[in-house]
Image (cartoon, rainbow, N blue to C red; front, top):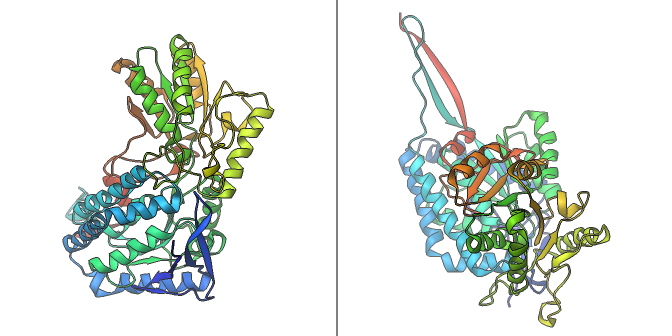
Length: 483
């Protein structure tokens, strides 16, 4: 495979990093290079922010009719749709996930742009009754230059989830993709230019998070920062943002419970629990990595789940029939392996998995067997922490109070799943779970129009839905004395 060369995308064109440095991007299934990408610096961040500011203040963007701004978003969505297969294959190759999952990601991206295209001319203020001969109204105006720091597990989807509403509101953007997975972000920036966005409206600076990400967060001409990443990274960003009181949106980690009641449709629950735990090799903030099964069905359910998991077909994401691909990097593989090994040292016995596959064809890649621990020690990482890999911790429970207590016993509060045919019980249980999102009889699931948000240490603010666009606006109150 040819190793492609990619520059930064600043001011509507590709350019080399100011240092001329590059970094190799690896195929996680083989750890062989597939691309060489510019490694940006603080100077490149300055150039990108300057380009974004110039675009924001230009009449071409500032005075553009919101309906025409929406049309540009729609056209970008169409560009992505037209290159659906190409982008999906590139995402699969770069991340390692199965092609069918990558196709779902890319489809979601163009739906995001289509959705926010329709909102662009519907961002409105309000008229407020006040005493006397006065008129009072509010305006919603764009923030300016918005920074977006994206993760490596869903590189394009999670970047565009913030970029689409930011552009819809009239902002310009600078995106810092993860160093491991920058390829589709660079491609979509070029598509934005082709769709007709002004030069500088959509910029991409690749490079190390410590330099590029921190430079973006500290930049005095950046008006907001949106981050999807680990909880620890989110805390670090908040400390930086506090210095300038920069508006910050965070979507962070999770240790997400799936609760199976005895009356659930067990075959459907099996499929949902398996997919929720091992989709994208478990590298998901909302992975259902904490399984709680009622004692009446626990043994049979776990045995069937173990059989299903043991049959999971591993391989490169682009290979036909693969159900789970590699982890994204050697480092991530070591981190997840260390958590599995620690659990075993503390007495946890894997129901299935627990190591690397024996298949000789998989030895060069970052593959781990999908692993299930039954009743792991409470102080083990697999029991309490977001492992961010194909690891599921499972317990049985006697009654709903016990299930709720265990489900909520975590510093996170992102997502939860409930499996039951008793919808009255499901609604009551959903109210008791301390999570921003609850899915009933399906997991995981979300749409561009539904809020994606976490409680506790799972984040700040809301992604997706109508209200997500409000983060990217200022409210201005105007009061007029009519006398």
